[in-house]
Length: 189
Image (cartoon, rainbow, N blue to C red; front, side, top):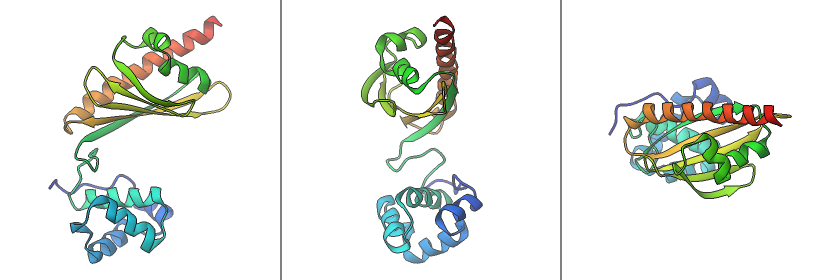
């Protein structure tokens, strides 16, 4: 068990999205016996018995697990840890996606061999093996209008919470390198 931690979203946000505050969810889930139930069963209960959608059911479940000390900040259901970083760049989503998924383009801004592509959905997402530190780097792309796009990076399968600050810092710096690369590519067109 971990020390209890605050949930990942505010009381106002969870009430707007799920219809109840953290105190209300905690009372409902405690009374149901959620402290002795696995993550998936809690989320299913929230969907089926309380009618909240799957995304909010997951959010409430994770928040509850943090409140009762079952899950530390950044900890996933499998016991590993994750962190995230994001960046908006001055490049359309097509250029942005190619900068990650094309080996030659990626090698122009990121040390070659750090990532190995596992899967990709064009202009939407990509998953890589992290050959430098181990684990998974998952990317989610979104358009931000003409000539702008963003990527949200989920750095997954970290061995401990101690790895979170360093890996987050590393990927933020790499996102800065990516932004510089994309902006330079745009200025030479």
